[in-house]
Image (cartoon, rainbow, N blue to C red):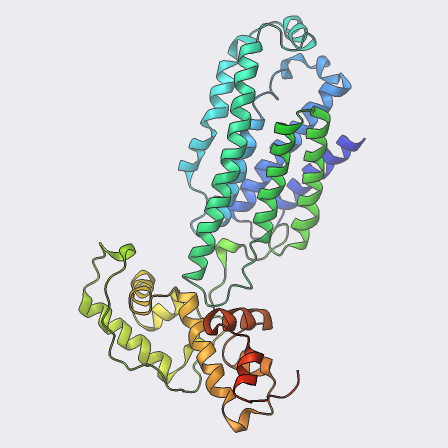
Length: 382
């Protein structure tokens, strides 16, 4: 009953994904992966219940299937963090399981009675092949968990290069997904008992259903991390800003081979500084690299290079640095003493107290309240 419930929930989630409005490539990848998990669970249930022997042509199909789950996890991570959707080149990751299926041709060509005998004798005659397949499965599982974590870290870094506020971009769903699969591979490595392994798969599916439904955009219409909405900027008031003339800057190693001429980079930096001085676009909590580049009539890659080269910061740190300096300036004005700390933080472009406190301490080396106490300043109570 436990496994039947897991199988039912798995295919129910597949139906939800396929009937979801505004489906993305990532939704299709997740639906295919869940369908594979459901088939895998169903074949295992057939084995432990003995019903699989009524359909001997299905014997052996389950053996290479664990080799599919690592690539499917990785393909889902790649697709959900890409604005270009699914890349057909990623199908190359499915070659290893295809090779294992081909290597089992001798077994698949056996008569039904011979297949049943091999199964009932725990793989007699295929011991070496079974051992090699098991090693390949374990290696594949951990390799793809590593690749998924590494890609997610790279994606997080790209977010900091493109967005000024990252609180709305929730990567926890993807982290939990990878950790869930990692737990299953650890159970396979440390225990190896089929009942425990497939039991953990059922709990993993329950987790997918529970957390995925709660997470915006997974089983309902909404944004995914790779498709974050870019909002237009809003102009605001003025403060003192660095001089418009760019400082002497040496290209970083990252942009050592860039084709961007220095005079063009200088002009972009001057226009950027002027724009921040006059319009204070950093006060828009949704300002992005793409939107700022559009207002400067340049490519986002060029703007990112200029900020990195002249400021030595990512776009995220650059914008939040301006916000912190704006808060410091506003907190010194007697007219603002009736504002709360959080109200001033929102005026400067921070979209949450957590983001404000974290960035203020990172940039200033002290908390906002410590900064105010040091200058004997007091704001209204929150």
